[in-house]
Image (tube, rainbow, N blue to C red; front, side, top):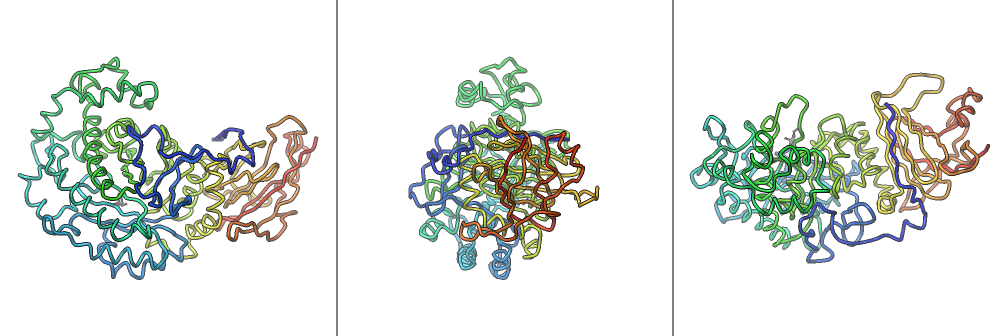
Length: 564
Ligand code: DGJ
């Protein structure tokens, strides 16, 4: 399969620095995201067509990794891990903070472990994204304090079709929501007091992969009452106002009932789809209330992560019903204006498709969980290059933090290039390529040329690598800077004139403090892709191209010229 991606031909080098800056992350917000009360606090800012994380006044690219669920419950356990992660070129670590641990007795908070984590991360020059394991973790409520777990009369649970209670706090219980919001607000106040001068903590994940598992909806008495009521007016008004911009999956559901504007959930959305939409709305409202309470204490960016629909799933409940899967984005955007980003946890192979579906309607791209290794490196390059991502973070990072690992090599290059990547994201002069044997080539239109990416072929060999990836910046007239691994690229012009593109000069090199430091001049075997020159000429090809070996990304800069 050949994939063709077209970027607007607005390549003007000068445009790099003439950026339109305004706050906000797109139409995802029913209300504009809260401006940071302190302009120096971490915040999101729309720069050109992308939303970026602004830290200490400058855009920041999150080269992250998430530790295993239990690692950060003990500061001693984490102590040797911080320097390993810094050596692996991470700049940010995603660490759980659990309700169970910070509020062991109602109203009595213990932040001692968190304080040490923040101190030790700072000492290793790492930033933190805190994962608030409050009411839910992967649907379940296993991180709640014992005074919540033991009192299901006060803190109501979800019930399934058989009338059995599940170990999941119900969204239809105000006591659940208010207790979570109080604990989260206390956490955010504490982070503000401890960290608002240094900004080690840059973002918050709200809960973890929420939704009902084991049934398509909550069937507790309170949930059943709510399900029989009319769909809330605020939701109906949002849908009416955004009708033309609704995402196709959601619009199709609503269209099937003739875009009904009032009635019960089943009247408006139909039997079946109604269950998941009802849960998504109620999770969104609950999480939004928690986020609002936290932001009132300390306003930094907040996102939710999503357990995606798996190929074997038959319906909601097999995956958490009510989470922000693609067909529920409109519901979440309507119900949770204090949530800045809807994130996918990418543990499925179709990274390009998942990123495409999570970058719609102004949703900024942040990937809190995915793979490391070569495939993870490819995901990171593609997310930053093609989708203006804010950050990337493999799960279980402490197992993958060897400085010689593929991800460390990829992060080393990304950190060298980060200032440039951020500038080019804002200017729209960047693209990415993500190739596998099932997707062995991809065309990218960027500036005055189309770049034809293909999996790297060995010289006189047809053996292909399993995957290849690249990130390309249009760095000047007839000039591109490309970083990639196991990939090759040829060029065709998009403007009138001579049809064949030659490689004038190809340098490999590095970036030091943002400046290009050239190494070898590449030519001969390093750029000759084929010797059948007449068939190549018939295809308007010179026979040369840029070639990137495997074993981690390298950076090359090319000057192009054209001939008839
Ligand atoms: C997804 C969850 O969000 C993580 O906390 C963790 O449990 C991983 N799955 C395990 O693969």
